[in-house]
Length: 588
Picture 1 (cartoon, rainbow, N blue to C red):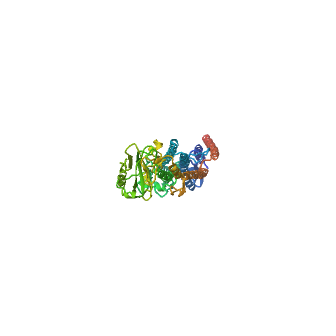
Picture 2: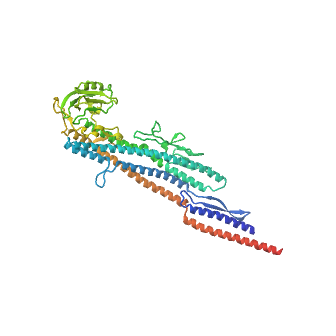
Picture 3: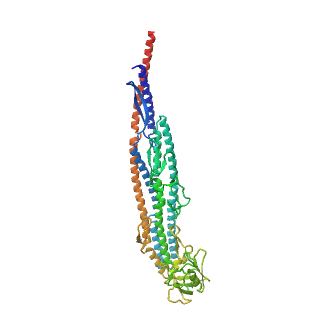
């Protein structure tokens, strides 16, 4: 072998070792870099005419197990969804309060209902007590406030979910564009014969970031492009990035909803005008969509059933009574018009009484005689000392023409298919107002003046005598009925994932709280399991393609020795060249 060939081989070894040292040093310095995989400078022998001519670096590559990477991507999506569910259901559970604290008192709706029951029990012993009436109104207002606050909290969570979908969509779009840009960079580097390993690492990191937000599928094309799709095959990255579109709502209420097939007040996620909301079933976005559109509305539906049935039960009782002194005006809550049909039978008693409950005038009205609400208004106007009308909101109003008050006894009246008493049907003596939990409230005038609480009843004797006492607050009939309305078993329909049930309002409130607690516990267990699974795949991938500092440090030491040996070989060959040159010169 000539000295020139030997030196060429030594130089190639030196240069190749320099590259390998550089790659190994980079591996060591990037050991903690997210998504970085160990790089290898691949070396091959050079042979000329059957004779070894040194070595050459054929490329710098990394090895990533494709199946393991896909498994990690799926685990990332599952963990993203589990983490989000765990967070939101924990917050939802906190909204409902606890059924029992260390001192055996709880903060849940069930405990607040129990406090109302206690206040009503105390009032039943002395129904004329102004202080005890105030306690009942206060306890009822506490319950109303908790219902409204819980409803508001649920809608705040839905609004937060809606806003977080928008943020997550922006993050996905950024990563989709990153992948598209990296695809182009990888193709350029490959065409120039440069390593694409670091660019591929960045691309893998980007696709993992997307996977935490939503479930996707992907593959690497023959040209080196990474192509990304939704679960049903809608392209997110092909020759370019196709960004997601989503518009967060400025306000989310109990009536806000999303539908892919009809008009919606909440936005879905689209790609190129195609709604892909239903295709996003996992990841952070998938969980947020399910929470916003299913899980949290279900919780609201349960709360609304509790509120509306509670309002109906309390109002049914309160409309059998009146306050003492009687109110100067009764205003209904049901919207009616003069031509509204009055499908009614039986008799209702409407009276005028003074502030002490002494009868001024009255009439027993046979409801079967009146075809419309307008006919009823005319009949009430025929009672001495009373005037009736329908206000601009469509509510029937009955007023005393003097300083006296108005009292109603529903007697045998039955209106509509539900057979409600007339006062209850019109809402003349409602205790609370509610269309759902979000607006459940004690009637404003009763809240301002607890003396208007309906604890008395109008005498139901066959006939009444003017000047006689027809109202008395000493009876516990209405108060006891209020307690029964709270504690007796009633039927609750299946709603929001809860099956139908029978029990008291406190029982149903406890069922709601327990159901949420169970979901929160399951979500926490699921999160732990998904976190373990994701960690297992991440560790396996790191073991297979991550940087092992011990191995890389040892390799660096070996390469440094190789570099030193190559340098010494070159020095020796140079010395041989010099000796040969001197010998030739001395001969000449």
